[in-house]
Image (cartoon, rainbow over all chains, first blue to last red; front, side, top):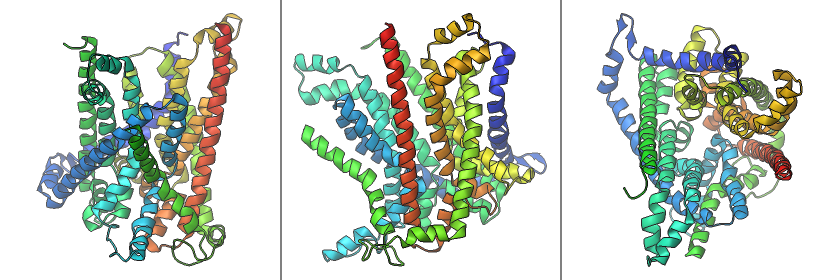
Length: 280
Length: 265
């Protein structure tokens, strides 16, 4: 099946045109807008970014939010994946459908349900009122944003953890047990370290996706929940400060690529480690 | 221990799915407001959707853009997958990464970028431009699914067709394409929903035109009446049916090709 050069080019052409014109070119435009002023190359927008208290605050908030959501997802998702890894493959397929079901439903709608549930007149507060408790202000706080984001991202983290758990040779755990390790020790010293690659994959993907969230903070958060994507929107549609929006977008893009780069570095080292043989 | 994990897992599944189930009773209320549980049941808000021309035209626009973006991303993505899987050329893995990148890079960056170039090219508020922009978001799914499936295809079958006198295009059309059809269908379903759900890019580049997500988004800012839950329930039903059809076809095909290879060996 040897394809000739013109054939390869012809096959790639539509996708290249699409990606080039409405992906690479526009993104390059944003990047250049953030280092380009009227008089050519300038670092003015970058200076503006680091001089702006709001921007730094929002950046810091974005990273803390992403970190905390990722941590919650991993803590909730790992045991769930552990349960799934112990099921028969038939049962696991069904359970995977359940986990993936929300995936097929628009993020907008999934976020909207939390307004209905957590709102002042929402289901949670009705329940609390019925038992005579004080109503809780959850909606329009950071707590609501975290709940909404965890619900959206949890399936991804669970499936990433599950994938690495299924790759583990169960005989290794058995060997540890036979050699006298307790259940807990076998888990901690054999199973857990071997499943960490999935934890890393799930964690990094979750973190990257968190950085770019827009809908959930906008709908469920309060005025203090604005993160970088919302700030970009505000700069474009309200303040009309495009240069600044472009710098913010570039910062977001560079952070995302940096995370991906770190991830690739880690996985490559891991692969090299595995190739060099265990226990070295 | 097992039992505890099982209970825990049930809780997680409840957390993922239960909120969506609340939408059904809420959408069936007679009242003007979101109430749970509803006092009297009615289909009033479902009717309200079909009676409001702005909702209907938003749905039609979403279908139009979605179908266009699906076709565009299917053609471009499938052709590219063939080259990516079957040929060796410099920069192949980089190209693969670029095709998949829109899936993982923050959508808001792409939205801003597209807004800036569309303004320059006078393409804001242009349905075709919106369709092309959606195709970019949809194409990663096509490339991922189709190249995964192409990699599993036994090339000797196609080679046999070539030996028996079929030209390269004819051999591909008659031998490989039927094998790919289910994955093309699954990719198409995913691509369609990627476009159908797209909000952020549309908010930036559509000018004033409203797709369904944009219409919902605008409604959320104004009032909270039960039309949105009604729309949500209908959309969810459509998604589940789409997923079901895609999955059934995928499974049937898998069984067919598996049984064929097993009789071979």
